[in-house]
Amino acid sequence: MLDAIDNSEIAVRKTARPKAADSDGSKLRAYHAAKLLKISGRTVGNFVELGQALIAAKKALDQHGQWLPMIDNDLPYGRKVVEQLRRVARHPKISDSSNWMILPPVLSTLVELTKLSDHEFEKRKADGTICQDMTCNEVAGRIKPPKQHPPRDTLLAEFKTMVEELKCSVEAGEITADDIRPFISELTALLP
Image (tube, rainbow, N blue to C red; front, top):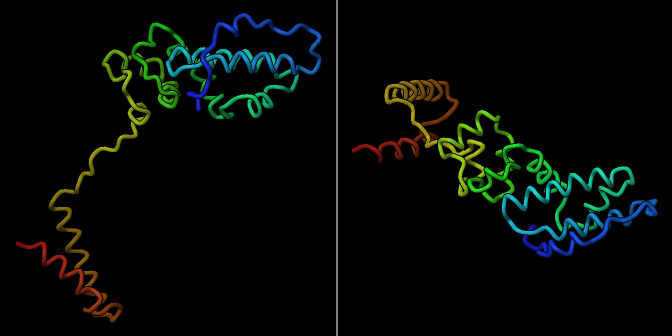
């Protein structure tokens, strides 16, 4: 979504902020929308700049009831992305330009990084875990470790219990030998 934003920052800086004659805030809304649309790129610095511009726009437009209409009608991204950008811009570690070289230029990953405590952020920064190619899942610790199988003795005990339960069910007439025969065939095929 953010790739479609034009890269003409210079024109925005020359755009004059509307004067007080804007009673309904519509000119102020147009000013902030134009300013936001001029910020482009997929770098940490651009995300922070865009987030800071959104914070300023909300402060200016809320009193006129123009904040949400601007998001809904004038921007190429929705409320969720707006909140993510504002969150990233407010975070002291991510908005610190001295960290930008190591941070991944992916908004969702930056959002996950905002959830780390300062201590955890510094720890991961020092050990190299935080780097430009890290993923959102790595930050959140959502990479699933390989499935660990129970120890052999546990598996055998569970199998023995299951066989005893099947035996009781067959004797009680709840299931027939034909019901379990396909499973026995599969187990037999595994044996050497």
